[in-house]
Length: 256
Image (cartoon, rainbow, N blue to C red):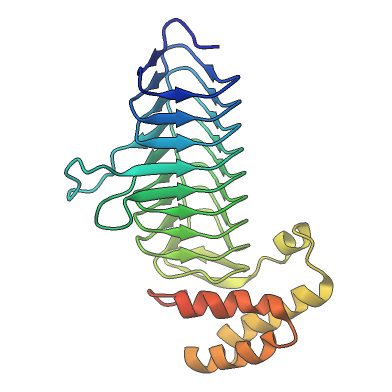
């Protein structure tokens, strides 16, 4: 299943039923799990670990050196889960020694053409980055988040689970869970109710999320006052804790 023109380093560990296409390059210290498909001209550099059933399209560069002027060849890595799709010309960087030396990507994510995940990012599960969406260094993206085409996320920002960034959004502060943002710089526009419906949230749960949004953005509360109100809501609506946890972990402040 390895094309004759592919270059595979002798130290690479290749799982079962892996396809490696013409002129693809698999570098040293790379582990590729079972059933992966590395297409023509794709590059996987190490140290990188790919789980099972990942698909890497042509001209993608997976595990490349971090685009950080402080990087001086330290031993850093990229760890990728299962069932991810990396479309044409994606670039996914390894971590840096200034953070945890690791970029991490979960399972079942879709990275469309020309997307970029910079060093030390953490991407959850079931995330979609539409064409040319870009994560700067140290960004965290929660499960089921969707980043529209040409979205840019500032370094050290957090993007909450089930959130939605409209096309062309420039995000310079943290996006809470379930919130839809748009603009340059991005501002909140409501909640991602359609996404929550698709994830199986009930009408009552979605209604509680809308109330949480109003507490954060529509009642003129300071963030510590909003946090107190959300903690009270979470006593009866446990899923509101995702807002509580997110706000408590926020370092850059919330989009406003």
